[in-house]
Image 1 (cartoon, rainbow, N blue to C red):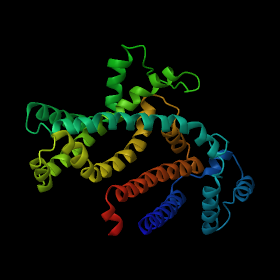
Image 2: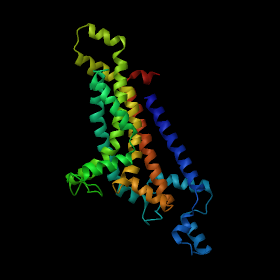
Image 3: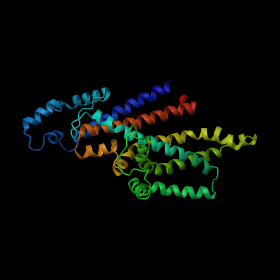
Image 4: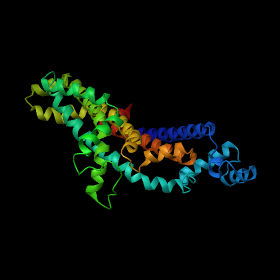
Length: 313
């Protein structure tokens, strides 16, 4: 329990520090949101009136406390560009980004872990050399270029795929999969390459340890050794890279949503930055930060489940 409490405290401290940094950065960024809202022809009286309405005439520490209170209560203010509450805009776009991230992670886990186990059992054989070389290529391909290749060779040749736009799940499950599968593959392929190599190396490291030779000497089957002992003991480093990859998947949606014209959080972030929509940008940044920090918190908790010695330390 003490370990979990320490992780929760670290989670809260991280979120507070990120909120301070985010708020401070947007105070020094060029561009006046008031002028953007009113236009360049607005006089000083109109500017001062709107500042007072939005609370921008208050000291910075008061503005920060009001903003944090809004984060906690779910009131992130109104978007300058869309003239709508930021929470409503996020709620509209979240299903697209979350669906894309979940499908991507499923593809990564389903392919990378079995592939890593398969190659680890065939170290230095032809399959190991070929797949290890292929992963180098997978890690080197930029996501936007990979997305365009998938559009050209898959999207243009198979009617199942939708190369632009989004179909809601409530409208058509098949249509939603067709719209999200190519973007998910675009993000997943480089991550599969990374995850595959970590799984392979983690398993090979365990296979070299003395306890594996001891278990094998007792006549236990190789399958039992692999899945009961080696794979479980390899999960700590695998979970570590899984947490990092999850954060990269969330960040990777920003570029990929632009390539495939998906109406998700990433596309909304690009639009809000272009229009200096500070309330919306701040809300999206905090959303992304919360997801990444939460995932790392859950990974830390899983560490303690897989290895009780971590709780003791």
